[in-house]
Amino acid sequence: MSDKPKINIVWFKRDLRLSDHEPLKLAQDSGLPILLLYVFEPELLNDAHYSERHWRFVTESLLDMNRRLPGKVSVANDEIVNVLNKISNHYQIDCLFSHEETGLANTYQRDKAVARWAGNQKVNWCERQTGAVIRPCNNRDDWDKQWKSVMRAEIEPILVKNLNLVYLDFDTSQLPAVWKNRDLRFQLGGSKAGWRVLDDFFESRGKDYHWFISKPLQSRTSCSRMSPYLAWGNISLREMYQHVLSHWNRKGWRRSLVALTSRLHWHCHFIQKFESESTMQFDHINAGYQRIPYRENRQAEDDLLAWKRGQTGYPLIDACMRCLQETGYINFRMRAMLVSFLCHHLQIDWRRGVAHLANLFLDFEPGIHYAQFQMQAGVTGTNTIRIYNPTKQAKEQDPDGTFIRRWCPEIAALPDALLFEPWLLTSMEELMYEIRLGGTYPRPIVDVTTSYREASELLWSWRKRDEVKAEAKRIVRRHVRTKN
Image (tube, rainbow, N blue to C red; front, side, top):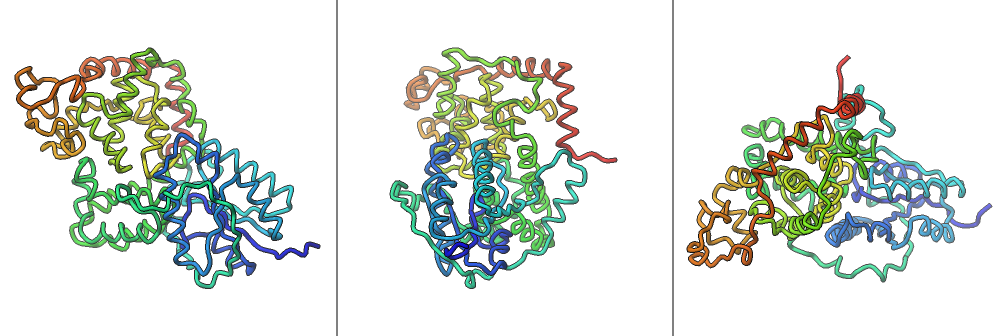
């Protein structure tokens, strides 16, 4: 019989909130003291998908939680099993509560290690479903019905001020202190900030959401901007969905709200795809594309670097990449265009750019990121093949060039007629506008007219292959909702 005090642990991962949190609710109802735990895991801190912007957002989220708690979240910087062993030196752990996580392969292996540890230590690990993502899920029969049931379910209140908390002080001296300093370039982490952003959306700026969703400039204000708060769990998808429904009958808002709720539905759909077929982190989901050719020469290396740096010579591509580097956000259409340019126009394997964009997206969500990346790369065999022309997109989505001029200031002086195609500058015009192609601003690294034709021929020829068709049927059976 142990003489150590008995406690329960709530292990926070991508669920950094104190409301609509079933593991926390179950821990509160258990009656035992609770240790709230977040672990900065070295393997994730060193993972190429993440960068300082993500860990600052997490730190801000934890600070926000602490402001509303009658105690504090215990924060550690170690592998989770080591942390659990250290806690065991002080307490008898009765139950470990957490949400299921649809994460990268390293978090899956980590969770298996935790399961082994819990079994050896006779600790009950109680995992609860995240959103409407089902584990396991071999098909989509009744998936939509289940999604709606989960999203419309009553949210059980958590009496945060009544939580009986215990706290352990771990050594976190190796964590950068700068993470606690606000960086105004990025959205602020935490539930309080998330609700403020959502309330602001419904004040006025979201009314034209459906009109401006594809515009790189206007979308920065007309889109909800809730993606990082959903990705890091500051607000649950159910909380946001129900909040949107509470505004459903507002006059003049219906088209925007229909568009927004459809994207909340897609949120779980794509994560479910990754949950059910996580090998897509490493391989084409459609095995028929296994041998599709990509460029692997020295020029491809240079082009990849130019893409990453926003130095491709295509103003909208460069503006989007630089905006991402500086702010962590661009809209969906521009993200798709960046992937299309990488995979179609540069003919570079999507796996060589997937971690780079994850590193930049403040709202990086593994399931959505990988499912979307492969879809835009055209290697699923089921989705529409879209090859974006960056010049056409610039003229349509940024017609007055405001976004491009903001992020490509070296060509800001150009008139609209030349801004979208600076390679058309004559020598006289280069002198007039003080722009030197290949110096002040790069020449295009590829001819998109030629690359479009080549990519189209390649993708459609592979789409007709028997092995691609067979795999496409398998994917549809597993991931697409079918009627009886």
